Length: 506
Image (cartoon, rainbow, N blue to C red):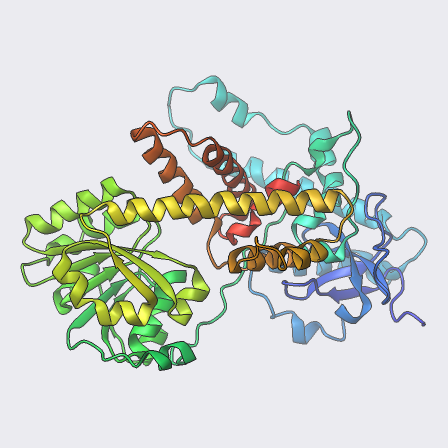
């Protein structure tokens, strides 16, 4: 079959999980071997901006100039804009010679060196513009200011082609065997050009079949909700669609727009929401954000009275929950911690598991809301018990995901097909929705966020703190926490927790 593209052609190439990206048909690097399993026509593509190479199926490639007007606005990220600027600069500099086949990669070597030089010059300019404060410096601070040697910068550019798997589906690149003893294995230490996954737009007004089957009788009370993140958005969607009256607030006001269209009211501050609602739920990022919501300026405490109830759904530790409870109770309000087990999908489908502790009357008044949010709710007694239960379950989830990631990494190194491993796993007693879903995310390689990796790592850290307080050894949790911390440092904090595979594999 005749191939449509030839060496030197400027193209749009699409990798699974990413928008079309400007590139050029090129020779593969010595480290990038052609996948032997692909029967369709493949081309090695050099990607502008990221300076990476990958094998792409011809069906996922389009001519650059023909589709430029259509695709140039398909992505609004800074990295994409940089890539467009890079290919336009290349065309301008090369003129009609951009399709010269004599030495198709020579110009790219020059281009990559030029990009590195520009970044280095920009970094130096920023250092000159930034005022220097007279602070005491330690040895580690001096190391941070040491300029990167030119040889190291050049080496890092050469390593980009090896690290390409961090940015594309594993199905698109042939897996290389593990390096020999003494080889430069540090080439895979750090990924490059991490692209943050885009959160799909939530259809707030769509009612799931699960919610329809619940036949919920909504409470007559007014409910507030603080935080419209990955979990909060799905929860509020089900509260509205089950007929509850909801007042919403989010740090980024634009996120409230779709919920207001669906019938919610919007508060200008957390205290405004508390004032307007009978019971207010809070679901934010971490313990510090939860405290800021309560104790901060225009926060919850400003309007809490004896007639108000406050439900904390943020994943926090028992001590933080008890601190918030004491402050709420001191002003006459009622407090309930309601930790949730589940991720983005369960939040949108209304199938979460709610773990509650604190004021029993408040738990009873929230039953219609809990029914809309989840499939089960449990009352666990005094404040702190729900947080402890949640951390125990999160510990188990994190260790399990780390085991899955290491198993898939080992299979890959051993030359096994990961899809075969997952297919066999589904037939064993290990099969469960979490392992299957995360296994598919690992194979796909795009890690769309259902449970943020940084939130998983936060819960592992809180579990370790709880273990220290109780003098309970948690060696597996400690090791798992290190894996997640490293993946977070590599730039995968906002990706799904399954992205811990990156640390296990590379």
